[in-house]
Length: 195
Image (cartoon, rainbow, N blue to C red):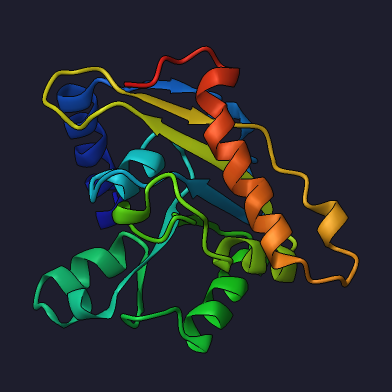
């Protein structure tokens, strides 16, 4: 068994025991092909939360500083993370992300950018990657608080149709707003009460 699979088993057990998440709509995530999981961002606990219920490996951008820490560098690379410089996503990170998606991988992105911007206007990176790579965009909503043994809910919605923005008009703001609005609507659409 690979290190990634061992780590995934441990993370899954930990999250299921501590946060008892109810998972809705995981079947919406395609079994193959490039996929971008676009989620709201409420905590540093979010990346494993949106990845553990899926059989597919999810790649995430992580602060470049984390890759300078001995031991942690190897761990997060093995789990699928790749570095991004503080202060903005570099051209190298964007290029690498597009390559991953075109190779049929899954990338997890938080369009809000940071927890401080929770519920705010989204950044354009997710829309840019989707339009450049042709990857499927799956909206994800994390509902609840990361408190021990308090149930949370994780919702994977149906793919976001961005075809209206794919005709060369390059309307990243419009595509981003559509992604963000879809994420915001998921709890109501699936009858999940927000805390």
